[in-house]
Image (cartoon, rainbow, N blue to C red; front, side):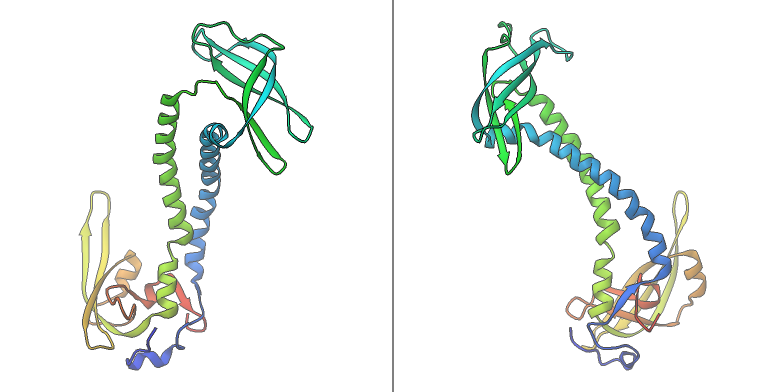
Amino acid sequence: MARSDSPQYGRFPPPPRPVRLRPDVRKRLWLPRLITLPFLAVVILLVVGLLKTPVTLMLGNDVTGRVDEVRPSRRAGANRFDVVYSYTLSDGPAATGSGTIDTGGAPPPAPGQTVPLRVLRIGSFHRAELRNRNVAITGYVCGGLFVLVWGGFIVLFTIGAWFGPRAERHLIRNGDVTEGIIAEKRQVPGRRYVQYEVLYRFRTRNNEDRSGILPVTAAAYAQMSEGQTVTVFYHPSKPGLSRLYNNSDFAIVGFE
């Protein structure tokens, strides 16, 4: 990124600058980041559980297994049976598996009968599914919608907690720097609390006047005054992306 002509630039090293999270921000982020981990693990398990059967049926190879045990399923439906089966892999080792089938009123397979399987094998990992298990499409659609909505929320929250500050880090590390002023202080009433924000103005190295609005805490709001000089970092090709240095999550090493 290009170097700013502002006299304030001499305070800071040229880009790329060494930056790090401010200590108070690091303390603020560790709990949300920690909370996301078990929820993200649950999302991964749900996705794996949802996809393992259709992926095995689509990508697996045809294998003939043998029925070892058949019993009525505890799931709803008089025509549903739990089947325990065994099969032999191409390189010799035997394996067992189980699944539920819906016979549609026909007699269930008897122990000792053969049963068609689909076996997915990746290296030493392998899993099997009954080929004619009559997958319940409705259940997969409902499960998929749940994982999409709930899992999507968790993924977005995780991205915000772990990667959200990266855009600001890039701005402080590589952006142009100039002087600005606090043009206006605002208090925006809400239903439960008052939001504090400041409007600041600055001029880019191309003599383009720009402004930005930054939500701040009540403590930071009280320390600011209209007309106060501030240091502004901005993206040289997108000056609409800007940040007040003293209120950023990142500090330049040696200039905290």
